[in-house]
Each structure stands twice: as structure tokens, then as C-alpha cells.
Length: 98
Image 1 (cartoon, one colour):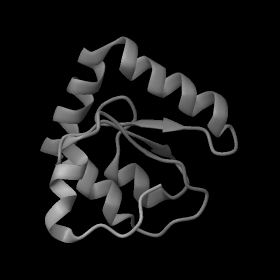
Image 2 (cartoon, helix red, strand yellow):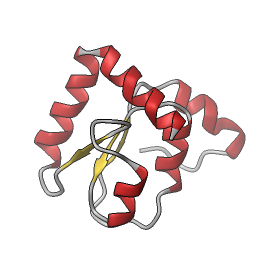
Image 3 (tube, helix red, strand yellow):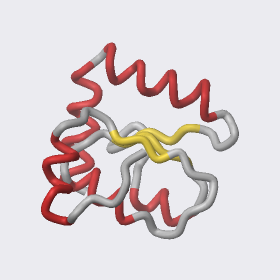
Image 4 (cartoon, helix red, strand yellow):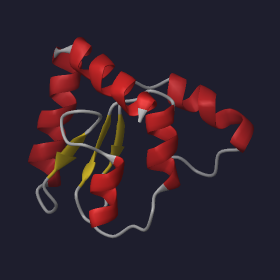
């Protein structure tokens, strides 16, 4: 978890990481998710609102994990990105294009 980050530092912060995870049970339209996708990061998030399926297409430009099963699902998805770097690159590239 990061504290407040100045707008000028956000791009470099995303560049320092390989995956963006947003395990949320309740959220509006998450700007941080859009920023991560625009920076080319593969995202793992939850399918909690219909609007999110407009933002992320499962297994195309991100991955949805099942709400309430964060431990197992997040661990599995993050390990997949680590084990198969080309998967993260493909999803990140598609996320940037979206």
C-alpha cells in the first residue's frame, strides 16, 4: 500500500513494478486502474461492478479474480505473471491500447 503519490511521480512508480493488483469489494470508477493500464501494466482485479467489465476484458488486457477468494485467486494470477513473463507483456500491451 502506498501513501499519497504526487502526479509527477506516478509514471515512474508504475514503471518500477511488473503487475498492478486492485483487490476491491467496493469501488467507483478507479482512476488508478486506468492509469496502470495506460502505463502498460497487466492488471489483476475483481469483477465487482458492470463498469469494470467495460474497462478490463478478462484474459485479454487484464485478469478478473473472484471476489471473496482473493488469497487463492490473486496468488495464482500473480504467480502466472511471474512464471510466464510473455503473458504479462501481452496483457499489458493490450491494456495500453485499450
